[in-house]
Amino acid sequence: MQRTFTDYYRCPEEFTSCFRGGTSPSRTGYFRFGPQAICYGTNRKGAVSPSVDGAAYDALKDVVLKSGEVHLSFDSDEVVDNLRFERYSNGSERRSPLAGKLANRLYYCARPFLGVGVRRHFQKLRLADWQSIPFPRWPIDRTVEQLHEMMLRLCVEAHAGRKVPFIWFWPDGHTSCLTVTHDVEAAEGRDLCPALMDLDESFGIQSSFQLVPEKRYTLSSSFLEGMRSRGFEINVHDLNHDGRLFSSESRFFERVERINQYGRAFQAKGFRSGALYRNLAWYGGLEFSYDMSVPNAAHLDPQRGGCCTLMPYFVGKILELPVTTTQDYSLFHILNQYSTELWEYEIRQITDQQGLASFIIHPDYLVEPRARDTYKSLLAFLAGLRSEGKVWFALPREVNDWWRARSQMKLVEHGNNWEVEGPEKDRARVVYAVLDGDRLAYEPD
Image (cartoon, rainbow, N blue to C red):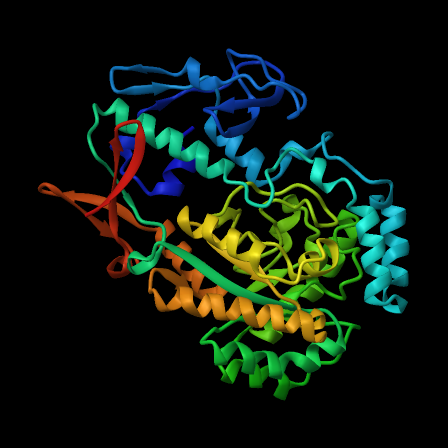
């Protein structure tokens, strides 16, 4: 039951093996683990609630520390997987009458003929209940992190307050990570890409561009090579962005062959679906190294849910880089905000908690001067953040490469010291978890 905990912290087995627990035949539902972590799964002792709206039983009071062991009343791997793979939403997701398959099909058939104003009105109706959704928490949900942090604290207690070593999350001692991505939806957005690259470069930002390979617009080899030669990354964005990629399993696997072919042609390591539609159970058909289609808290997206984490995680062989900040379309056209206030709040929340701050900015929605000025303000804020040198600014492929290398690292004890072994070990840092009163704290080696 310590699989997800071990993968998250890369702790030595002598520490992670302290956990005991499991499940017995019981109902699946919601419960708490501490004051903040909302869990979804089975719990051996306390009650579970069918709805997150109800009062949740706190499984923390059932924890038993005995002989260097931590006994839990639930399987933490089950709970974390349920959150990351959005299994909690089955049967409990709030749906708008405009969010059904028929409405979705009609919308995407008409979409090419609808202006942004009409689409904005339709989306507002469709998402009208977003503020009443209690879980995941909006705009940032850290449930997976909160669960793991509580387990780490119990691990320290079980080892009589001994410092627990783990491999830090980001390379070279960076406190957190930030990446900027651009989804290009239509020809107007494609034509703005050169100017957008100029703009990003002027603030010292390298970004990735997700390109739709069929029907929306044409892509010349010189266009693609021009992006690569300037150090920008190219990824595949859906197949034709018609909103139907995940409408059925047969349609997905019919289209995924062409998607994979475009991935090879684009020399792309990453994929993102149109409008962040997803079904992680089918991801085995994707021949990409990483995906960027799962939101942290999807209140303002057509498909509700969210992975409840600010960290990358594996979906089989694919690494998921979750979308952790509000998309520009939602900010401008659903929330009617043309300031960076919400973005700055999200950045602070994410970077203060060692997370990945990932942005989706569409060239198509920056044609309007007011929107472009807002993005410029964001870039100025990011440039100031970058100058401090604490946050790692990286392309998605770099995040993917690092997280895969970290997943192969391990800590080995030499004398009184712990050292990292594995790929990229020179960039890794050892950090110790300690208790500072009642607070979990991290001490560098």
